[in-house]
Amino acid sequence: MNVYDSARMAELLAPLGYDATQRPEEADLVILNTCHIREKAAEKVYSDLGRLKPVKSERGALIAVAGCVAQAEGEEILRRAPYVDMVFGPQSYHRLPEMIARVLRGAGRVIETDFPAVPKFDSLPAGVGASEVSAFLTVQEGCDKFCAFCVVPYTRGAEYSRDVAAIEAEARSLVARGAAEITLLGQNVNAYHGRDEGGAVIGLGALLERLARIEGLARLRYMTSHPRDMDEALIAAHAGEPKLMPFLHLPVQSGSDRLLEAMNRGHCADDYRRLVDRLRRARPDLALSSDFIVGFPGETAADFEATMTLVRDTGFASAYSFKFSPRPGTPAASLDSPVPEAVKDERLQILQAELRVQQDRFNRAAIGQVLPVLFEKPGRHLGQVVGRTPYLQAVHVDAPASWIGTIADVAIVGMKTNSLTGAPADERKRIPA
Ligand code: SAH
Ligand code: SF4
Image (cartoon, rainbow, N blue to C red; front, side, top):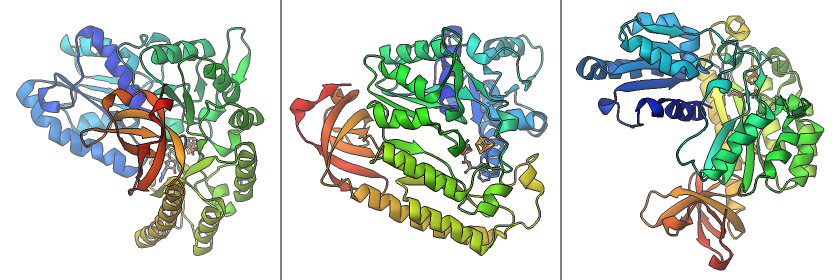
């Protein structure tokens, strides 16, 4: 979502004459769009700011901190890095032009961390410039679930769903500008419940069905989902909508009922297993990915073993796993019985080794198959393009750059650590996406 927000900021700044650069030393304005989800991400902001100090003193560039660290630690940032000009949270970035004007006028440093009454989406400009082949589109933001470990409800604020018409207009604009695939984004994207033109409230399943009708849009995905919000209509979309890709990121966090309860996740391990069964009945080739936290306070060896059992029972195509990181202001930060760092490390290693085996197994199973690949960008080597299978696996193929933006059948011939290699199966079947 930060990638999406950054792209919208760039669009917002274009009419003011700003153009994106990857090099801070040549910038007139540097924006750090930050993440507060774990301590490591948050601490990185301060080391990055230290490195940016010369950009400020030598070039007089404006320095801004955006995103969830800004939201959570606004005053602290200004105290620790007095050369920062602007601090604003994820719900305020539509005000960027007026914030810049205020700073340039010499009206002092800006801090904007209130949740505005009017949603920012109403005041963001329509997209300009070329789109990525695979584009993001935020449809839902914020979270009301308050998992015990998580800062999102405090930094991104309450759950909010955009109207269907605004989403469809943005999707059409992305497709007109070159997108062939759209990933709908939300902190709890499957809690989506937006209004259509007639004022009726629709869920994510119906929204996907609507967007699937857009001509020129070949693929749809969505992320991130909560197990509790996987409703019948959404599962049915996986069965019946061919543009909806057979890959689902469905975080479970733990396989221990005791910990799931302490985490306030609102479901048990067997609820997750039953849900996966229903999804696989709807779409037998569905590839699953998940998030896991090890070392939540009070996690015993038996709790951890329950997580390992769930992982082995389910089988994941990929996954993210993290050591519990106590976040200020969350209920879990003040729980007793912290798990020692060494135990966290050991458990993380064991879990990641099993997830690695599962990922390799999943990728190896693709070798020998012919899969439709949507090509997104040039590869690292000259004469190579990179695309993705329906299951989100990256595939490197020797082919000209003109293949970018098209879908071709690819024979999968090999695998590397995190990607596949393939050869064009039948060039006559290559289609513009
Ligand atoms: N809304 C999604 C997840 C959003 S946060 C969901 O409900 O599943 C992304 C991931 O970061 C989470 O799934 C969790 O695994 C991890 N995470 C969040 N807070 C964390 C914390 N305090 N310590 C470690 N990992 C955390
Ligand atoms: Fe955080 Fe996701 Fe839980 Fe919301 S549902 S509190 S975003 S982990």
